[in-house]
Structures are given as C-alpha cells and as structure tokens.
Length: 349
Image 1 (cartoon, one colour):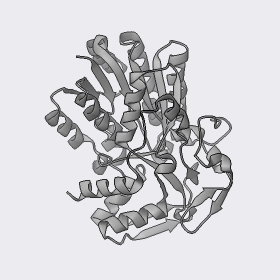
Image 2 (cartoon, one colour):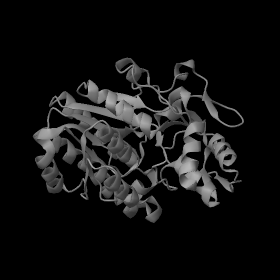
Image 3 (cartoon, helix red, strand yellow):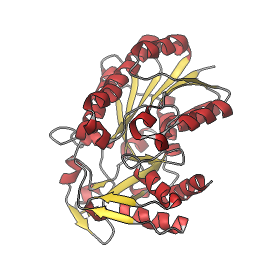
Image 4 (cartoon, one colour):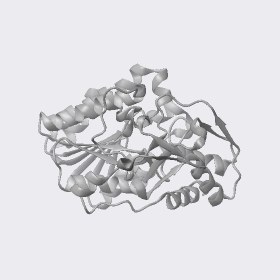
C-alpha cells in the first residue's frame, strides 16, 4: 500500500487530506501535536479531530510529533519513506498577530519546520510529490497598491487587469509581509528550491482564505469560521479596519485537497500556484456577516474598529488560471453561501 504523509494532520487542510487520500486506498501517516491549542487556546485545539481520524479511518496512523523535532521527523520518514508517494505539508503557525508576539517561534515552525520535512523527504522519499500549503501573504502588502473603488459593501479593483484576481506574477519583493508572511515566504522559496535545485516534485499552493467545517477558527486566524462560531454561540464579533469592506476569496478545504490530488497525479518540480475561491467564491467581511446572520437567524453584535491590522489586504482574490491550465480537471465546487451553510450546520450539532 502506498503512503501519504500529512503534517498538521488534525487541522483543517490536514484532516481533509487524510480523509481524501485514505478514501483513495492509501495508507495515511499523520503528524500533529496540537500546537494550535498552545498558540490560540482550548477552542483552537485539534485534539478531537485527531481522535475522530484515529477512530474512523483504519488506514490512518497518528504521530504526535512537532515538525521542529528534526530527529522525530526523520524517524517517521525512515519508517515509511520507501512506501511514500505523497507528502502534504500543512502544519504551520498561521496567525499574523501571534507571529509578531514571538517571531523566533513563528520562524522555527514555518521556515525551519518546513526545511526539516523537505530534507526528510529528500533523504527518504525523493520521488514523492511534496505539496506545501503556502499563503497569499508571500506577496506582502503589494496587493494594497491596486487602485480600488469603494461600494456600499466592498472594495473592487478599478483596473481590469485584476478582473480575474491576482496571479503568480505579482512580485514578492519590496513590500511589508508581516512576520508571518516573511516566515512563510522563506518556506515557500525553500520548497521551490528543493524542486529546482534538487529535482524534487515540489509545489507551493499560495492559498487565499481556506476554510470548512473542520476549521477551528479563532479571532487571530480563520475569520469565516470564527464569525460563524460567534453567531452560533451568540458572541460579539470584531472587524479590524476597512469598514468591513475588505474582500477575501473563500475556498472549501475539499477543493483545496482536490487541487493537491491533481498535482500529485502529474507533478512538476518547483511549481507555484495561487489557490482560492477566485471570482466564483468571494465576499467582503460585511457580506459574510449578512450571510451568516441569514443562515443562523442570529443578529451578531459587530464592532468595526478603525485599526487596520499591519499588512492586511484590502482586497485579495486569487487568479487560478495557471492551476486550471495545468490541471483542467480541477475546479471550485463550493461557493461562499454553500460553505457558510455547511459550517453553520456542523457547528450547531
């Protein structure tokens, strides 16, 4: 049986990957030590998800190992490397705000941790497809140079060049990235280098707003999941800056993982793709609040501050044309209303 190794296996993208590839008949080896709880508190914990995966999926093997533990990572890859066809690296410190509070830990997780997994792959399964969950924050605040038109509920680019979103030609240089964006950019470049220099089958998927029912969203990370949770729990919600008109493209974790699967079927070393809901699935924060209120029947107590989070995008929609051209079998299947409905149903249970 071929094996898929997944870091961050109990998180949003990791758990979706586990279920998807186990469903294709692969053995899945998960690496997750619930660092998310340490970073963001009890509500962000992935422990229950890890328990469900171990209970429900016979082909799943869980290892409670930190990606910063290089000897521990190497032991896992030594054991499973000769069977491994796919490595999905989804473990990360994902918050801008938290990263600024502890840059060394952020870099150790996002950059050094990625290097540990890359090198283990090179040593033990160099022919495997190595899939990295990167971020649109590698572009820093350069998207904020795009001229925008303001309407009642959202910002929209005035330049037709961005009618289908932001593509991979946007520069990653000369912009403010946030500490988180910088650590992820370091990892992104190293993943590319292991493809271009060493010839590994590596890909960076630069994600927009990735979400779904398995997302343990908190205020510092996972805005849509956190918003739905606030509505279901009847708790207040805070919007930081832009009058709530900032726009994000929203992609379901299932659609993220089918992109992973498409790449693994025909990998090209050193690939880079923007990945998000694109023009098919996006919303402003104000529009998301309206949708969630309609779906839950709850009136959310919303506070909009004048404070813009440092480096935060006013508008970001992913242009996925490059990905679609390379893998025409891939498409976005879930739009924002469908995602919201699924998340509300899951959280209300």
